[in-house]
Length: 453
Image 1 (cartoon, rainbow, N blue to C red):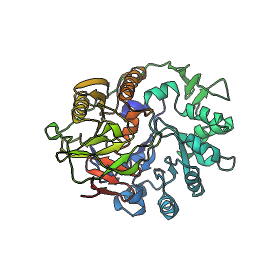
Image 2 (cartoon, helix red, strand yellow):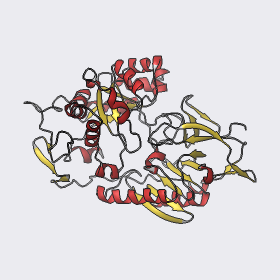
Image 3 (cartoon, helix red, strand yellow):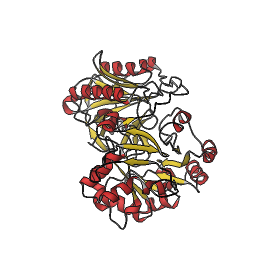
Image 4 (cartoon, one colour):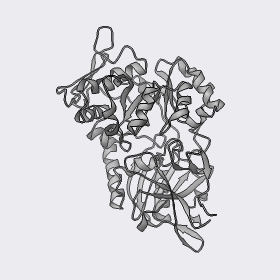
């Protein structure tokens, strides 16, 4: 994938993945150790070490995590520290972490800036932190901020834009236009040590965006190294066909899949979804119980959630309950589940959940909405279960149909698929689910589903 992308019409740089797996409390399709990552330092398209999500491991002195940080001590090291403060945050920064994109509150972001971090103001499809953070950016501290997206669906990219949307939104919130452009250009270029980019001066690369209105900049012309790449939102150079293919990554032990949840008590832990936020609540509720089995109760917005290991057909499966997705009936399933990307299923009944999950498997990955035994909408993602080779307009239409189907079944979320994809990321508080079970992120421990067993 990297080889296919880096010689295309856009500049493609990457950060070496620091947390594969994110923790030992989930099963990933592979593991990257320090000795796997170190050779990447010599690749000119690799800028440093990507977000170190296992912040508990950093603070606790985990040898494997510190080995990776040490290997990239002379390069850029990006962070991930939602809600971290005080002595823990100071230890995290002292270890060599240089940035964070998880700040959602002004006080949190200012504390990180004062410790020397680059705070990346995130405006994505689900996590939207720009409105809360823009007011704290001042002429004195603006050099410590930049913009990022961190997960945008095709519909949002096409209709709103990416970083350009963040620029326009910041200006609309009162930020000086020149400062807003700086947060998208000069500041990230300096952070990632791309010193030939980020400004229009002699000696720097002519990577340029031309626009008409400084108060609401929209790209009219895009140049890469002085050559015109796009005009009025359309590429003017043909896309490069992928040079390689990926093996199937949908390997599920279907014979062992069972969405039934035996009643092990009266009160169960419940993942609480919050709108426009990746942080979840750790709730406790009483599921409907009949004949020794716990059921979803969509009338109380209490749905089942399951994670099926899909890389090695191990049969590993985590099951629990979630509130906030809002389905009144049916189910949705997706092979996009950060960051292990196992198969995640949320539903009001077991039949719908099985229909959605099976269809994702048949598609070799994707997103599916089902009701009973009927598939209502689907988004095929056959490349690693994460990507499509179709044009963005095609994928946009497919995603919009799937989101529309989920909303028709009752979900009020802006993007139910993007929201649920983070319900398995066990490094963002407070309660998450992996194929190994429920994870209390504050304790960094797998906990029982039932609190009174």
